[in-house]
Length: 83
Image (cartoon, rainbow, N blue to C red; front, side, top):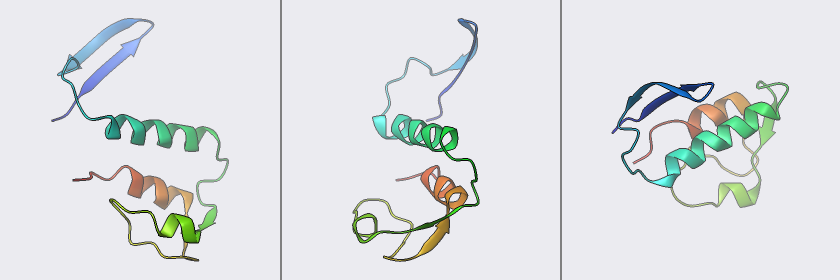
């Protein structure tokens, strides 16, 4: 299911399934990406994966403790379709 809604100055220009209920995970992923992009000056900055982050369950990128990855690649992984 894909949802589209474009709003400019309070007017809906186009919508497709905008009233269809969906799981919060998609919204959470998008909001996380927006917050990261608004608060990161350099998307090529490298991040070192902590033991806590490496141990989180659920959908994973296969990252391990002390792996280095750019913020850009983390965002890419965040926005991949999850099942």
